[in-house]
Image 1: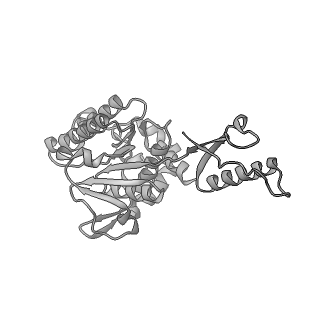
Image 2 (image 1 turned 90 degrees about the horizontal axis):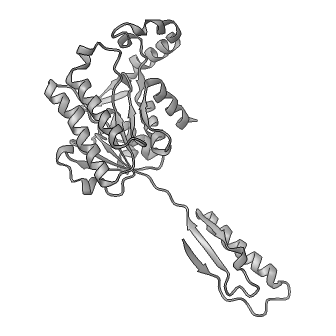
Image 3 (image 1 turned 180 degrees about the vertical axis):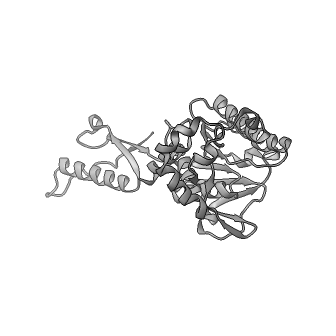
Length: 299
């Protein structure tokens, strides 16, 4: 908080202005100017004396800036998160092996693209000034590869963020689809659950784990656009509309593969935005809760 002393009082004010009216108008004018430029002001009225010589004005800058680091920001989900964040006026840094994406978009120019691998990242460069980290890291391959990409890479990122003092970590995980245990023991799911445990352990009161199912949207691969929304959007509507009828079947193993509605990539991105701006938003979130969080941002 910084105090500014007013200018010395005018010893002989014009006839049309009394000292009281001059004081009131000058302070009010200064207050209005500060408010117009987004500065929150408070005044010590008891300290205002008749000659204005010791009238302190306390000026408090009400400035809040968000800087989010998106791991895998050039990917399908990561790029949607970057775009949504930029649209909301949030500063964005992306760390991914491919660096800056090749497709056009005005939002692309507003993101700081850093090429690199999580395992060898210069975290001092990536995390400087960050208020949150969002990880979209994940993929398929051999069991060992999936353990490394889905699990170990995220564990490294969580540890780096925690050591650097980043207050919030958001992980894009996956719905378990009510699969039997022998399928959930694959490297894909065990890697994701290992990453979830690390987030919730290191960030018990601010860590966010989103568990979407099938994510649809326009996915760009090697310069081509795959319109997953042509399948995902109508399927989401149908399954959401029939949920009350199909819910009794949810106890059947792997039933969610057919019965759980997809979620749009834009809703996942907006749920991330909600988690960035809402300090009470932490823990594990289901598909339905992801959509509810997205709806809050849309409202």
